[in-house]
Length: 350
Image (cartoon, rainbow, N blue to C red; front, side, top):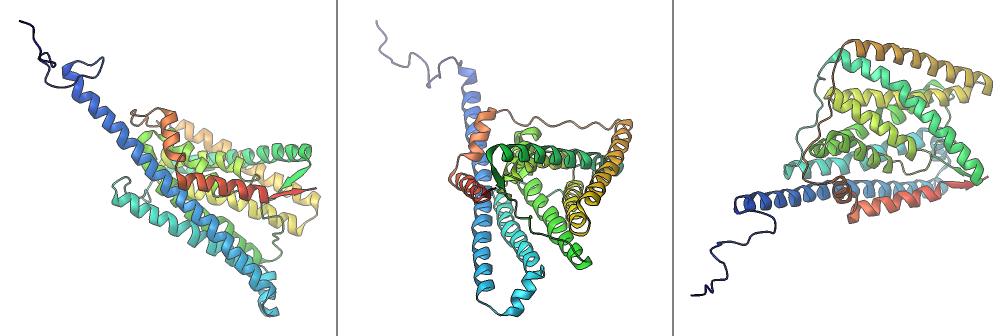
């Protein structure tokens, strides 16, 4: 007699190409993929939100400062023109509009059990970490010089200039030097490293150290929002991220970030107090000394045979899927749009 049982003895639906014993494995992998996409979308959306808050609040505070400057007493104008106002604005923007949003992001990620404790402890190896920081510093600075040179060539061909916002800064006294060191080198190094290499990079490492380093570097560049800084902040971000992963602590990347920014303070001080010729000699001499120290440190690091392997992470998602999950969400898209808009406002005709 013909068997009219549609299941033909099979108790459950079988995905095409899978045997009965692999059914559970198939659905487990599909669920894992779904969960990993959700994790990446959460990280991307929260970081995008933090960047949007930074852009919006910085703009609003900037407008408020401009209004007060044009509608207030001469005493306040004098304070601002002496540099105290600009330093204070930079400090407030960094602490409040980067620190607080990323703190909220970290709290949410901890609550969702997506991230762990920030790596603010000791390094894997103190000596190796020291050599690595010294070795990477001249590499970071030379990369900056190269990209700035290419940027200047492109700007010359296009007949435009991309402004970074630091063109009018000057260091003409010890007070200026100390304030600029604090607000340009110390505060950004600490807060940006904790935010980007701590809050952002750490949960991304689940999907591979290389992926986490590059993605965090790209998002790091979004915080700077102008064509002068975006290219080299990506490269610098990769260096900072690698140092953090290789040493197991945020402190080496904070120190490297500090010295990278402090070099800009030195250049500004040279340009503000010496002729062009002498300033160029001092700038290149300082870079030369750092390069020699970097080569020495790199050789010492190699002689230690200290091995660093980047973890591959889970393989549930392809690279394209991971990138899409992080960047294709409303907050991150808004952050990218704001970055483009800010970049356009930094363009000036010759």
